[in-house]
Image (cartoon, rainbow, N blue to C red; front, side):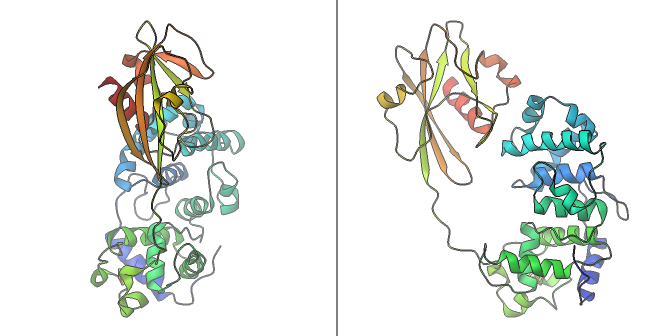
Length: 351
Ligand code: SF4
């Protein structure tokens, strides 16, 4: 919760700008109306690490398919993971489903209307709780996403580099949050960051906070928020085993629930490590032994923390089973929750 700012002119100027320039987004309510908490929650989970343009289509699809949180709760997890394909971070999709079940089962289908209540839901962290509380329930909460972080750091010229500077930015954002229209204020900050106070070349001449903005006055807006120098991303290597049985089916395996791409289907592979594999060593890690392995292609992919290079090798076996494995004909892959990385593997293997 925040107190009203001592300087009410700041929120007022921004809200006036928002009334004229607000973005029209599928999850937003028309001016003067409260948004549906289900829509706010769904969009906020989807927007973590993904652009607004990408999320629009997914959001529309989800809401058309599961119009209420109870519908999503009743959906099959595999259908949800399948619909999530392309948004990345599958742990979020799993938590999305868990959260829908919690809201439907423990809260009668109504999202809690306080930050503390929202924070207790699966997959809802402090940012998301504050965003839903503000936008859906007009609670004076202060969500700080990337846009709000940038706007606040510049307005108040907070020069301490991230992540250390986050505390000061959050405190400044809390001080700015008004008790009147806090939900609109949060969305106005997001819109200002997306449209005017952009990472490169902010359009200060169009900004309602042009005069009070400390970074504009100092001439260093574009350098804020300050970031520590970037570390180079490591490259990891793996060997993927494209294994056919006598009927031309391919061995797929479900990944462990926790961790990267948790619960998604994969073409089995070695560990992904920083030392490149040689084929002799890697073939000892194949889930089923083939008489011979032949290289079928290479796949490159980049995750947030590392680059990945996978060598795809092809082998044939008479049959066999492995834990969490299934045999699927490539023409039936469409029904499997295969992440983008694995779609690249399929493409490389099929030439
Ligand atoms: Fe951002 Fe410029 Fe507005 Fe300051 S004046 S908040 S730097 S757009």
